[in-house]
Amino acid sequence: MTATQPRSDDERRLAELGYKQELARSWSGFSNFAISFTIVSILTGGLASYGIGLSNGGPITMAWGWPLVSVMVLFVGLAMAELASAYPTSGGLYWWASELGGPMWGWFTGWFNLIGQIAVTAAIDYGAAIFTTVVLNVIGWDIGTDRNAIFAVFTGILVLHAVLNIIGPHLSAVISNVSAWWHVGGVAIFVVVLGFGARHHQSIGFVFTKTVDNSAIGFGGVAFSFLLGLLHAQYTFTGYDASAHMSEETHDASRMAAKGIINTIVVSAVAGYLLIMAVTFAIPNLDDALDPTKNSGYPVIYILQNSLNSFWSGLLLIIAAVAQLFCGYASVTAASRMLFAFARDGAVPGSRLWAKLSVRRVPVNAVFFVSVFAFMLLIPSMLVPAANAPTAYAAATSVATIGLYIAYGIPVLLRLLRGNRFQAGPWQLGRWYRPIGIIALIWIVIISVLFILPTDDHGYPWVDGFTWNAVNYAPLTLVGVVGAIAIWWFVSARRWFTGPKRTVEEPPEAEEAPVSA
Image (cartoon, rainbow, N blue to C red):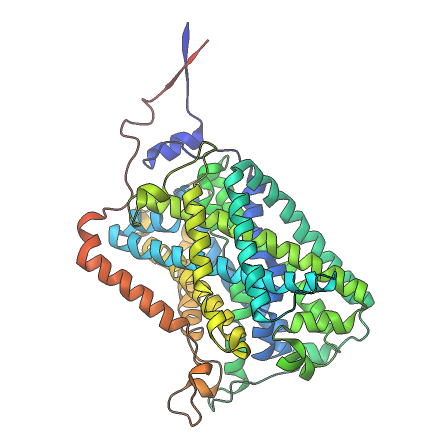
């Protein structure tokens, strides 16, 4: 006797979108949340990029900037969650843009997303290398803390993440689940240790009113510096699109991917604020924390080592370093899925290679692609003077933030233009989609402009003392890459890239898988 095995709702919906089930659908809703929460990683972005906020605006950037960014990012996340529910595919943003606006919109969205994914992976693992290098020295390995040591550790971390990713999707889900609890527990330990164990605590007035203005550009003063410092929080709140990219591996994806995005932002906002406030209250001396000769370019490490005894500072550095390793691992996972989906539709040179799956249904080649280009992106950090290495890191964070948020914004814009013609999924905004989408787009425009500006007067050509060392290289990088993508589109790609390709031709209701009984 034979019987038929009907598709699950997830497989049926994926078939309606044009794809057969190729990736292993083994992730729970919690795992879907966990990978986005891990990539946002408040113990990574919140700590590794802390100096960006502290030197631009000062403590007020921590006290007021984080809540401001959290609320605005929630609007972006709400708009994206509705799209993730309607179109639960690994293509995520690029697929949404293609469906709502056509191949050209999908092409540019996909490349912005891919560039942002690679840049954020590079920035995450470089930040992890900084903390890991300090930890290795603390435990007695004595490898030094110069940029050569950091870059060597950065390379090792990328290799580790690539190897672990090719093992299989079940391991990825387990690591993401462990990571989520590690982050929550780690933040709790940070707050308790710094709250009760720090040698000195700053006053409430210091934390909520103390300012630092390093812009010195003559317009806006500390207000402008405060806005530049928002990159600290905004960079941290990147990567939650991972919930969408893992849709084809998640059960009940039409609901769980949307919830994964929203829950990631809300939990990160609350836990992250507790974390950075604990660190800010524990600043022993603001001038020293900002002095590159005393903080090695990374104020959090200075704060921990000068506020706590060696045991507790070492413990917190280990907690942060492990969290950052989790974060980089998850970033490679999500980026490889996005590349797999983009290549599946023929948008990347050598698409057949990057869309190929291993016997364990892992896009191994895509994992290596992401890892190699993340490595290449930070090679300039070895070429600039050592004193400017933090500038290279800041440029990487800017590229990641701008690239990802432009990719977030394009499908949200197209959703607004589509209006009531849009077919919402189980999780939807109803009539609130328009005001939420408009606010999200306004915020994306604001941050995209802010984070391409130089951070001090030496980066402006019309100011005496201009130097290329002070230039923000993010816009140069983005213009170069986007220009190449645009030329490629108009010269060639528009003739052959037609957007998502169907791999399931027959109606999903008609296809059944025979099984033996």
